[in-house]
Length: 87
Image 1 (cartoon, rainbow, N blue to C red):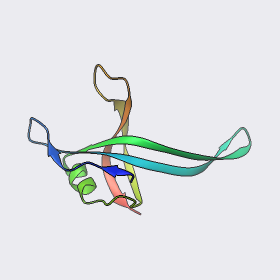
Image 2 (cartoon, one colour; image 1 turned 30 degrees about the vertical axis):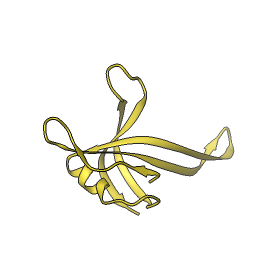
Image 3 (cartoon, rainbow, N blue to C red; image 1 turned 90 degrees about the horizontal axis):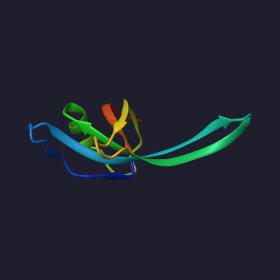
Image 4 (cartoon, helix red, strand yellow; image 1 turned 180 degrees about the vertical axis):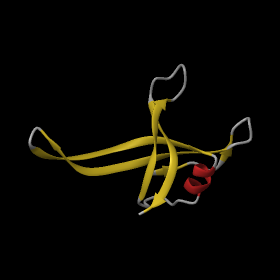
């Protein structure tokens, strides 16, 4: 994990944590190895927010979720986290 905001609450009272994941891996592309690195904006709500809120910067995690637009007006993709597992 690269950055973690503090725990907040939605207007409906649901826990919410926004953070950035730092991804680093080797991938196969056109028959060649390629190193891939990127920061991915992520958002966790409810129980996943409680899990994410306990993480520390630099900690390795495995996450499961889905990609969606940040909002109706902002097309930037955000990874919505359903589950966080320490590695």
